[in-house]
Image (cartoon, rainbow, N blue to C red; front, side, top):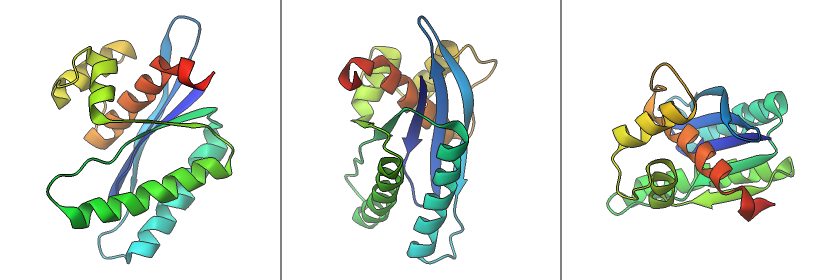
Amino acid sequence: MIILGVDPGTATTGFGIIETSEHDLKLVDYGCISTKANLKLEDRLNQIYEDLENLIIEFKPELAGIEEIFFTKNIKTAISVSHARGVIMQTITKHHIPILTFTPTQIKSAITGYGKADKHQVQTMSKMILNLDKIPKPDDAADALAIAICCANNLNRYE
């Protein structure tokens, strides 16, 4: 099964694509959808839509995982990221791909066994789980891979 993990953002949306088999997970691709800061919000959202649409067409994921948005300080950032998350969810749904959502604590717990793990611990475990030579960069892409792994660990919620 091909699984798409998405870490929503307006400036940078991370994506990670993995393949599950009976006993392991394999990296397919990862990276970021980046938008220019000088673009209007609607143009940034449209770019996220178009780039994600192309990824879905190319890799044909059967399941997607998306991180829940959790902000305590900057409400303006939370609102723009919420717009991006909505576009991401709509794009995935357009292709009839089921979506599982996870809180940051659920993702950390699924990857490291500890819900308060730091970013480096999550990245190191993601690297080990996917049998990679190095930690994926940038952080948004590494986060998206962790979301995809978390999604794979929760296949019973989908099936």
